[in-house]
Image (cartoon, rainbow, N blue to C red; front, top):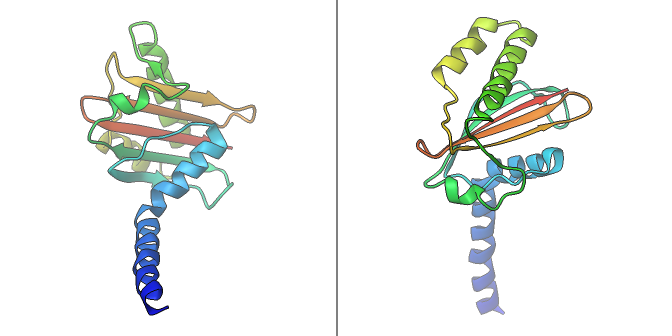
Length: 159
């Protein structure tokens, strides 16, 4: 009995530690999967640039930068990811500008949000990938990968 207890206590503690350490990603992944039907690969780091939502499922805007060791291979098999090419480059740029404009227009401190976008520029090139989904209520998500910088920029507009 004591041997079983000595084995199970460390196992349970390890599970609790792993869940606690990964909780930010687990909760975000679940929300992205439920809201947008998108699977975002596990990053080595999640940076929240801003988050104006007051809890699930409230309205607001979110901007995350996810850091990876290697992002391009992780997106190849994911449904809905589109390669950025000469034809789609302007479309992605338009979606990005719309998100930045929407965030600046709806929030009182426009200057602060404009500064956050300048300090955290969303960069991409041809051959990177993007995911965009627009809902009937005009909520949308825009995710843009940057293979050179090993980042994934995830922007959500929830109405």
